[in-house]
Image 1 (cartoon, each protein chain N blue to C red):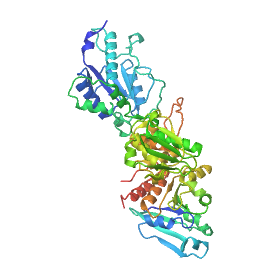
Image 2: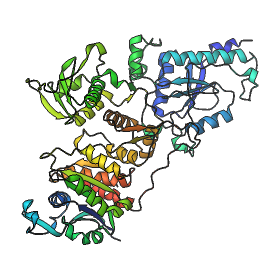
Image 3: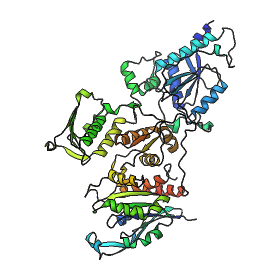
Image 4: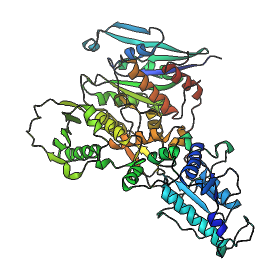
Length: 407
Length: 181
């Protein structure tokens, strides 16, 4: 029997492991965009729980939640695909339509399994009474995370304090500013823009074509000409240099523009073919490609990157001659010491993921990244922190002195 | 209690050790230069015959002593003495020398025990005068001897370059190092 009162009531939602800014965004979304069909609650007496699986101690929080509320409809959200045995998975950034659809399906399930006059309870249900909520997204793999000691102060903080928007930027702004009570419809253009918030495909940009041209140049041991919606570019493998005619500011303005393969020509030059006589400049390839990768990535990561697979560097980048990326020295030091995943790097070094993503994108463009398969069988997958040296305090003083702070 | 630690600079003659120490020392470094009388005179007019010494005051009575080893091999008996109590090694290599790889391997072998117990950062100088070997080629050589260390192009006269090299060494010792308050 369907409980019609549940169908029309405001569905009460709480969150676990979600940082305050994301909670605020969700609250605004419920109030401004969803016609108050849902309400964000502080307490535990709710209809639905949303667990942020990107939180520092997400696995522990999830286990505790299901121990207390084995039958409560739960939505798990994460940047990464995950397999969930009980609950619904939604991938970040959240698509408003998907979130609403999940909540409505949960509402219908609750209404269908709650007799109209029965009091609400949180007692464990039999399997026949379990709300049937299906996954909205296919989840090819199960991610396991190591449990960490619960720090009550960090329970609702996301990893390293990084604010990963709950909704894509374009919708985050809309949520915060929405006067309308209509949920915004995501057009195909917006959906495309939303997906591009965290991921990008280097091979569809100037960066990718230069990488391809460089690989060809090395393979054939000949200069390679790259033509497209830019002035000609020549890759010189013998000297690891690049000849460019266009100014850096023009070229890097093209960095984030997707380029169609049919608009690009890559040609191997004859051995005796001279460089063009037009105004152009020869410069080292590595700093150019590093900077181009940073400008193309804009804090995003290449599509297909596994945030939880261990990463290491083949060797240190020549950082004194490369465009500075904040925390590049520390990340290089860690990734040459031991393989660590991108997300664990953020935790171990306590730095925002966007800097790690920028560094990763740039190092990858230079062919410096080695990434291993994630060990899915390994239960304790947390990478130990590097052993601190005995005079670490003294080293900190040296660092401060070098940076002009402290005497 | 005052803490005193050492940072060692080494490398062949003319690589820029004295200059590098000058760029970060709080006081003009003490150098024990003499007029070069051997083949060194073809490279420089003067050369360090004992060592360079500079100092960084860290506050609270703590000091970092900067020692530059003499570049000639005949002074290598001093190297063990100089490295005792050191936090790490900065190796400067002159890219214009006849065989920089040979230079590098010589110093790696001479200081290997110290490097293994602390850490190493390598600065390649004079790359504006001679662009090869490239840094990635030095890294290939280091891979062959099982070392994964910072190798940066450095102008020893530029404080910024010397600082980033030393910072790389510090972070190699402790990647999670933070600036002390």
